[in-house]
Image (cartoon, rainbow, N blue to C red):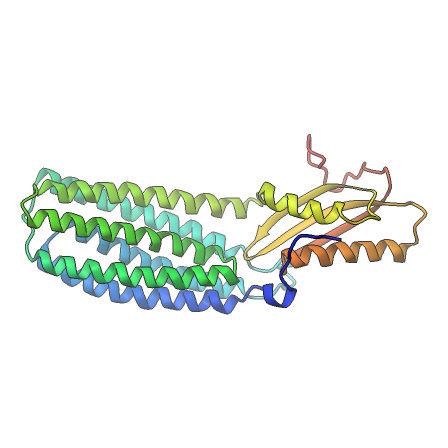
Length: 313
């Protein structure tokens, strides 16, 4: 029915406990980072270290929120939420982006003040050692999060991974600023770098917000995803046609519905078997998907149930 290589269903089922583990790991790592960066800023007074410290403080808030949303999103469907609670991750990620933007604005004002009123940095090597440790810890955490994303397509973990990945770049940049300042670079360079970090934080927050809104507004899956689904449908020899394919993400799961056209003389049981074949084929690609299939007689495409104005594909 579908000749594309596929993973067995049992091996592909999203493991939400991986997302939970990644959430706890993020909180543990960020608490260590806050303590050592706070000490480094106290000793050096470098606003570049302050920028990294603020980023880590925001990360702690974001990580707690992300872990809470993962737990809530795991709740099963109930009488009031028939599709489950998966979109709570998108709500959480949207708040995360707002928190990051707020931190970036604060950092930009602080950096501007340091450019206008430069402060001489001290204890450079403390800062350098701390930033080096931060790079290692952040890199280790990102590896954990990437492994979790291979097992569970959690938007909360993905958002967390994005800004912890950006932390690595920020910390490396801070290392460079501290090093060049040690060898006599002008003091305003510290503030200028922090301004750049603030802009980068806003850029990363925008990406998270867009993905969150895409889920909340039921944006269609990518063209590649739709093409995979269509291939499964069209590869069944007894499907005479199809129409009204609609897809969206619901937390870590996918929801898809479409109509198929079959021989109008076919027995209901036989038509039902076709639908089951298609469902099994799609679940091999998207194991936790909700698949809704409506059966029409061949040639009938005038359903008014979910026609999108101007779109009938």
